[in-house]
Amino acid sequence: MTQIETRNLIAGDWVDGANTIANVNPSDVSDLLGHHAQASAAQLDDAVAAAKDAQRKWWAAGIQKRHDVLMAIGTEMMARAEEIGAIISREEGKPLAEGKGETYRAGQFFTYYAAEALRQIGDQAESVRPGIEIDVRREPIGVVGIISPWNFPVATPSWKIAPALAFGNAVIWKPANLTPASAAAVADIVNRQEIPKGLLSMLAGPGAEIGQLMVEHPGIKAISFTGSVSVGRGIAAAAVSNMTKVQMEMGSKNPMIIMDDADMDLAVAHSCNAAFGATGQKCTAASRLIVHEAVHDAFVEKLSAAAQALKIGHALDEGTQIGPAVSEGQLKGNLDYVDIAKAEGAELICGGGRVACRTEGFYMAPTLFAGTRNDMRVNREEMFAPITCVIKVGSYGEALATANDTEFGLTAGIMTQSLARATHFRANATAGTLMVNLPTAGTDYHVPFGGRGSSSFGPREQGQYAVEFYTSVKTTYLSGGNPA
Ligand code: NAD
Image (cartoon, rainbow, N blue to C red; front, side, top):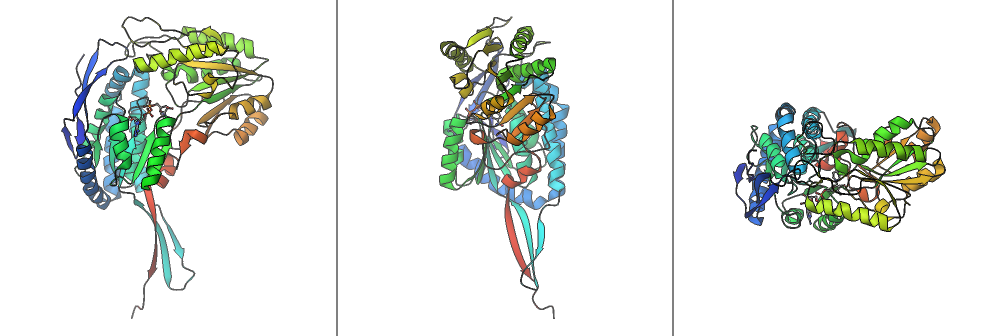
């Protein structure tokens, strides 16, 4: 397969970095995608200086220009969904259909925010003092830093870059080091538009180095981060001490309740999809299945059968439903959690180990545990693995209390045919995103997305709500004086 050597995009030009690291296909460790350059601190300074200049020109260019550029980016992404999706699949291990779907969705974020760039936002008010008018407008923040994870390497940065540009900002983006080639494809599409040089810079590198420098950089006025809670806590602390605006979407431990009145086949299909889709490497994955005792045994039996029927394989192979873990380290962590669950007394129903495929990769069987308690580590900590745990409960009340008993709160779901339970769940579940008779994973692009508790910090992402983070409010009092 062709090699993809990736450089950093600094101030409009693709340049080498301080050193390079190898990009290996997790479906086939003999397939080296290429190498990618690691940015230096000096390159970050260059990128920020260019971004400051580009941002002023971009804001001055006006809303029609911003609309047109975002529409062109989104349209190209959608047209190239297959090609860029294949890059995602090759370097991250996501089955091709999901990689393609992710790229198409990323394009939709750009076309959606193209339209948002045209929306008239702001307020007009009368002053309590006669003869004075007041207007309240939104202006860009300036240079925004975006730090993104590997699991949605194209969609996540797109849902940040698109509103950042739509509302007149410049962007410094640090993608995850495991997914540089798909990141470079996105950056290249943006950079080929008729935009001020350096409006978007992309710098790869270890989070603790280049990411940390971004958070501390005085020229970067806001940081939008998606990643793990532990990294997020450090970023929040640094951002607050620098008075940098911050927005963070992080991990979770999403519950899905299966009530005794649920449509059983639908509950099994949605649980299987939410738990094992994308190899469980989704912040919205259902990793706690809270099941009413009346349907528990039938549910476990059917879900086990569904999990074992999933086709595990090379992400680019036709028909693959579950690809590999993203890296050897991720796979090791997953297998450690299997041992932890067993040691805590969980009953392994299916999976639990590595799987051999036609190529050597980081494959693991979808894994189901039953007989788990909500206080076990596998039900407290985010695993980011194709592992899900069943917790048996005796009533709706117990199910809800168990679902809410977590430090996280990104998504939560319920499978029920009872309107009373569904509406009570909507009012009382303590997550930021709820799903009724749907998988916990799978959201739209035109409405806000985010969580509560340790899952989120700062203003919401996506939809019209994104304006809150990517703009700063200015209130102007205007007195006309004497017209004579
Ligand atoms: P991660 O926290 O290890 O890394 C995320 C990004 O932060 C990477 O680009 C990384 O290089 C960078 N980083 C690491 N240390 C840093 C530091 N000290 N300063 C600045 N940047 C730093 O997460 P990951 O392993 O790439 O992704 C998986 C995590 O992302 C999971 O916890 C998952 O739940 C979360 N996630 C959340 C959402 C959401 O919307 N809530 C979406 C996708 C993924």
